[in-house]
Image (cartoon, rainbow over all chains, first blue to last red):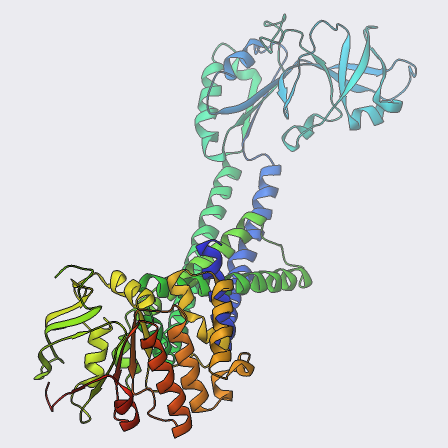
Length: 369
Length: 221
């Protein structure tokens, strides 16, 4: 039987024999978890929700709009994709109106050439000419059943819509979106590197890289006609995002540290009281052959088990309270971190009492006057 | 003296003083053989219990040595001395010193944890000992639910669990009636008959009378 199992069983038996101390330890750790989750946890959840909304608005995106004759061409996509701070770059050519080929007087949708990767989907369909990809909104506008159908442009050209596109939040301004993909896998600009672009979307890999990526994009647009180009960045949103994250983060850290410090102190006082009341027991254990390290291990194991129970009780209570009050719930990683921090804090608080218990002098504790 | 012929337990110029005090045990030398019972007597405060705790490695001497089979053991590391206490010594304290929060059975098998002995094996031995001392029906009780005599017999069971070669008892009959005292005395004699070295600090004339050897300590030994 493993030493850990034997130690755990003895720790459980000791905890059951010290009901008041055990209940107090569980209550203290549960209270610690409730306090952290109801304050910082709720703040973190609100922060996550706020950041998600800001991100949905496109905190990392840079949008360049150009006239068809502005000399902004598809090969810029190939060059942008080589920049490490750029997550993705997508380009769209000038609009050609198109309709459902079966409904000549039906509603129009804008049809564009597309280059690059849109929300993880490569806008490259090799060796399939006259194919197009359409968003859900475009498919509904065109009235295609099962998402498939034929398009006819105002210039009389026919294409087949053969796939669906998911349009991310930063590109919804292009809706309804129908794209003629490029045809060469090794270069997004494919066989048409000199084709004009009217919309270029560049996504930085993080909000703090929006400014340098903007500068990079500007430098790559030098060949284009500046008077026919506009550039929108999400720098302001990125700044707001960083400010929110920094402010709430520092508030949360401070609160958590105070709660953990108070909890560690309470656990320490609780266990010091236990060690004081039961000093004769620890003296007896030492006299009968328990090593100091065993006494320390026993008290720490006992505390870890009780703290684990307290953390689970506290997390369950706090999440229930947050749900009932309709507050945002912190994510699983935050909750797991709170449980781990609670157990470690309790162990930290138990360390001094455990060492004190291990140093009890058998003679002093066991002698009868 | 070789290890095989050395006495199981001995003290050589053993001296001990509490902080800022005169030595309560001074240059004390003796040997304890296997299979014998020794009574240590003397007035209160003469150092009987202190001597027992020194011999049992719970205290470290100010000078001199405690030896097990001729090997000095008093200066070993704390963990080593604890290991010897768990494996080599059986202790009976004056007030039984049971854990009030645990059952009688748990108390008897307590030292199995310190020796890393199998719990199952320890429980088997504990039942035999409890039956031998007539307290088997109390195995599920807690110390607060039993008499002083029963508590002392349970403490004897705990001390005998590992069948230790050295058995130290501090006033084991101090709070017992004559009949229960006789049970305890007989148990100590049986331990010696089984080959153990038994050392008892006592005021009880019945215990002194039953022992093979008597050592009387003075006001300062």
